[in-house]
Length: 399
Ligand SMILES: Cc1ncc(COP(=O)(O)O)c(C=O)c1O
Image (cartoon, rainbow, N blue to C red; front, side, top):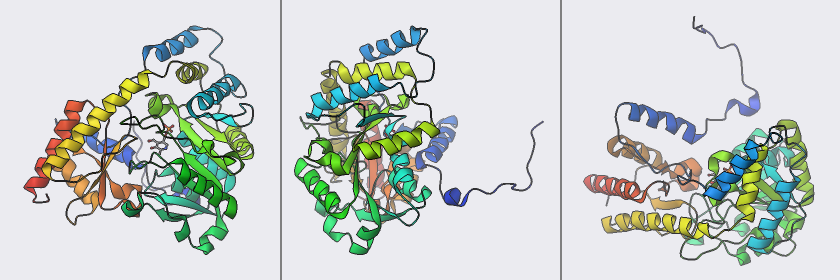
């Protein structure tokens, strides 16, 4: 018999009472309901890579999983993976890392993004968070009892934060400065000169600079993103999160990393040792193969993303909606035409065209006025999605 509950028996802890469910969890349910009624939904919302990793990565997973000694806990036994991280950083960025102290495994970088606030913020401390940005930077700070000072990312500043605009009252309480380039959701990129300024700023104000770099290997037109760790002395004030998810098409595998300042890396490691029990050994073996193996397949993979980007941009431009083509990451950051809020605009679009995109305001107040198109899906489907959007905007007299 299914029990019915007449009154709420439990109250959430205060620190989570006001936390809303992750946007994509609810959206996924809405889309499933539409599909159940027969709608042909084109999903251009979440940034989950649709292509698989290549055979040699899958073979390492299978090989490792086929052994009898790879099925136990791996806590405290991840040095091989950490060495692979160091080798990847050396080869890809020319950055030296000590695998014993300056690199650790994460169950997806999202885990570490959340944990960082728990290990550095006391109640009342501030995190400096870009707006718009990936939700976990701010929500992690709030759950830790900290507060957030938002740094607007504006088109006129190439979607880079203006450090000079941060008031000294905020700087006095701030502990963490978050950055993310190539950027989700704007698709903006940052060069080493900007990272040098960020490191100098963090040093001057006693901040931990936390750079989130999961899109570093998704670049177009030959663009290759730098690592913040390339800045001389970065390790003294900074850490960098990175991930298998986008680089190697392994988002569901949940394998990530944090590198850099050994003190902060240790805080995260200690916290994690109480919270989780590290990654399944075959997943790490495959991730090691991915990082140490031939990287040339990424060129073809990036060409596929670039073709999708061009298809979407061409349709939108032909329809009269000006959108800047991104040089990296998986997103087209498009202006909402007209005066409607992005939440209503995307909800109506989904209802009337069955194309799902992400309202810019989901990423913060300064994301209002934009909607995000993800380049995940077959190029024909993405073109069709962009055409449906364009026709719909025309019909509504928006373009
Ligand atoms: C900026 C940013 N950081 C981190 C993540 C999460 O990466 P992971 O799959 O490693 O948790 C995402 C995922 O979309 C992202 O956009």
